[in-house]
Length: 382
Ligand SMILES: NC(=O)c1ccc[n+]([C@@H]2O[C@H](COP(=O)([O-])OP(=O)(O)OC[C@H]3O[C@@H](n4cnc5c(N)ncnc54)[C@H](O)[C@@H]3O)[C@@H](O)[C@H]2O)c1
Ligand SMILES: [Fe+2]
Picture 1 (cartoon, rainbow, N blue to C red):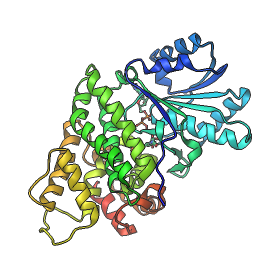
Picture 2 (picture 1 turned 120 degrees about the horizontal axis):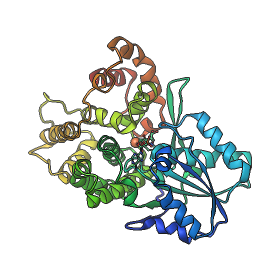
Picture 3 (picture 1 turned 120 degrees about the vertical axis):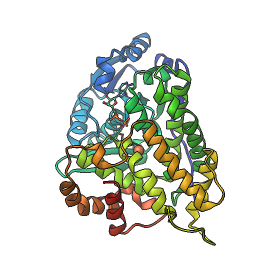
């Protein structure tokens, strides 16, 4: 038996933040990306909370790729007053911090079940609608995706006014995270008709609007579309999960601090080549792995469908290389981390491959990788 459900109520479109004025809580803890406060964007939330007579406190000790310690200090902050509502606002890092804080606070006091509202300020992770939260352990150089229904936000608010300020490079990285979520969910072993419909729409919107959104922060229409695509892709992988691309990207983020979306973007063409078995040199075959048909569907949606399966997969791979190049995303790890030496990188591969293989995301990859396969892909992206 399979199950598909969406637990998060989604408010979207112009003035979606007005939802905050309609809340009926006496107090809230806002867990915010420091940028949201330093830029003054926070007043867009607090003015609405004031209107609804909701007291609030701020927790801003949020950093990219949230480490366990920051989650622990967030739990300490929330347990002081146990507000009935927690609002996570920022990129995936702030939202994941808020989700993990809610979950671990509930373990200290099982009667404490605050209402969780996620408000993304990047269009990338889809974390506002997922049961995933990615926490890092800097001492081990590892990132762990926690997967738990308790992590699901009760509400998500998608207001494009919050993504206007996202710089081009972050728009590129996070946009490629959306593309990777949709493609991985689409070919995952857990894919189903519901997740597939959501993934197809996310790919279609990303194909149409990502470069436009990257090219101009004033293109509100494109940014609104990418904000929605990010959420659609989040809903898709919340149901179907992800794959090896994310399993491997988590290690690149944890060890070398490559931004999450950029790590995914670098890997994506190579993962499609690996999963499909289609390389630059092989001939057409009688039969293909089932993911090939799915990749071909996505190629058609992106307008790069070609004569047969082999040429279509090659066209899809070329298109993804093109997207990366067009948006200034490095094509290799050596370019993304100029200070990292080849010797250091190669020495880390055994450990990284072992960690990628046990990452929760890898379990639903359409092709079961061996340690040698993973090391080979890590070598190719150097
Ligand atoms: N929970 C999930 O389902 C899920 C899925 C994918 C990724 N993740 C995790 O999410 C994290 C990445 O999140 P992200 O890609 O959103 O990046 P991020 O949250 O780390 O933010 C990236 C940068 O953008 C800045 N920023 C955020 N909003 C901005 C705005 N409106 N204007 C200008 N700057 C802004 C931040 O201050 C930060 O410097 C990683 O830890 C990743 O592993 C989680
Ligand atoms: Fe991701």
